[in-house]
Image (cartoon, rainbow, N blue to C red):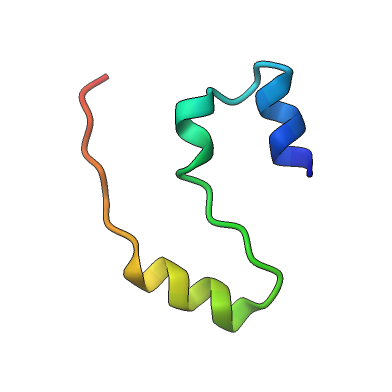
Length: 43
């Protein structure tokens, strides 16, 4: 996967990888996004 490769190359921090929601089917993606919660973390 492109995202996993981006993590390996240092473009995406490993701790941020889990924040990305990837699905092939739009209905499944929307369902997963509806269940996600926002994490407010100071920078």
